[in-house]
Length: 281
Length: 325
Image (tube, rainbow over all chains, first blue to last red; front, side, top):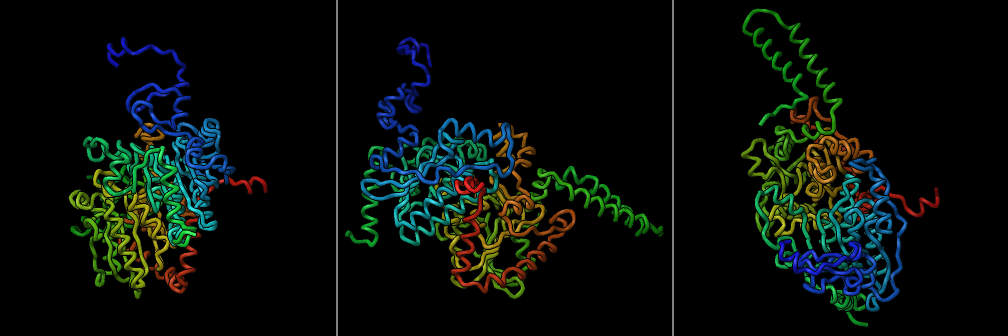
């Protein structure tokens, strides 16, 4: 910040846990205003990351969400220790987020349609996918087949959870195989890609929607920008791996504003289902 | 590029000494057979000792050895007369980092697919060090669909540092290509046998590894992330690769224990690079043993079993288990 900004910017003594800065335009946004405004920047309309319960409220009908598989918890199969033991990292994450894992799943209605919804939580160890995330998403998809209800997964993840090693990697195969079964059963799967969706999550279920919808500006990619820059030794172009870049390259069906998401999903579900025979009943 | 490892130095030194002695004994008329035999025995003992007690980080070095038999080496050893390499994904281009085509193993007609690394810098640049682009994965999927159509079992060799992280790869949908393979391989209606021959590098390896049986060579590795990548992220220090290699538990024995790998295949003494012929023979025997039972299964049975195999991968603590405990 230059000296001029320092002089002209009104000094606000607000405790730092009450506000956030818009990562795009730098505007100071009060948390209570953000929650009211769907975590959109009121100056530049940037889509900030949305807490999971706000996301669930955004996409489902009032009080219709009933959580399932809440109690499945991670174990430490590799006895993994980096600078901290894995169980300690899990305890910190549980404490911070008030949920047991990086995805929250449930049954709900969306504009009256019965849906199965999974929402990933980036605040829980970077939304990383270990055995529990893979298992919960697979159960969600299998429930969709069994109950003939569309499945929506909202992704926000850095990828596979390194602390569970190869078991994390296998969750990519497990979830993707379940989607193949959904495809064969003609049950629609909607993948909603939010900021950020990368690595093993982007390279499995998140890219396999019948319809892939991304939020504006969301970072979506397989390899992280730092890894790519180090590999190819050149600067990445502006807007690389953003939602609009994926739209341009044919990898997502649509980039949809947060305020229009529920309605867009409702329209698609309605047309795809026709009570599941192609015809409206 | 050095082809030798620090930990192999004692072996290399003795091998040089052995060569020297043999030369002397051939040229002169001195009988050195006792000394020669003693050194030959010592080399075997040393190899057994050193290779029996490798650190995970050293196993990674062996798995990446530039002379380690590549996919094409193995195919040519197993199917010298019949293999026909087929190219291209019919969408964008041909990816030299993945090779594929029909060939024979003994009496079986099969579809071969595998990552392809090079044995020198020039070849490695052409093969992009065995790191595929989306078109490589899409070529592999095209071959699998073809295999299904003509009822050829699929034999896959896994040996890659990972899917390539680059601009073109992202533009053409690296994520989608990998994800699509994972989904579709689960329903390819012919037996799929996967052999991790070298480096099983993350999603780039898994993208052609959704098979009915997964075999891993003794000194191969298979991991969610490279030791170097993991060290950089979790330790914030690329020099901690050795620690990361240990923590990630990426060796064949670890994967067997975790229920990911079906069988560990032994390597020639001192690693696969010392005897590619023997590696090819091991693969051939493994296929002749495991393929016939898979071929008698119905399509439904085969696919149900494959789905079940991956469905139960993972370790966690569920509500029911808590209640039972």
